[in-house]
Length: 173
Image 1 (tube, helix red, strand yellow):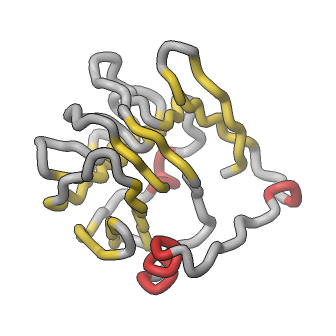
Image 2 (image 1 turned 135 degrees about the horizontal axis):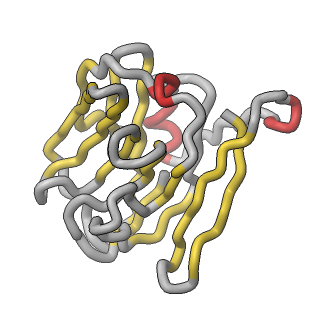
């Protein structure tokens, strides 16, 4: 996703998909000030990677999160900024019902105060060269034609302006 942040409140989300505060996965661009975090939690277990990174204000940045098997990487503008083992897989969450962009599962967490563009979920893990090329604008990868799938749709609720209400987006898993 391309993100242009206007402020740096702690515990904001690029996305937060799950059921509630016990079963979820989230990409957190501001965690403890100069940290970026991906965490997944379900079944009483959790796993995360944290990297040192400060998202700049008023500047477009390409952020990417890639999980392949048990290994996960976070990229900013095509450069790897964090990596590590994440033993829990997103598929372990099953069909989620509380799926948010810029909003948290936790009611007290602030909304992400940013513009966001090109939030894309691919059906495979992209490699470092592909992430770098997308960040540089050298390529655009096609998203699969989801009209051919028989998988059920998942609702993502985006809050482009928290005061005007949500925008619902359906996509298959």
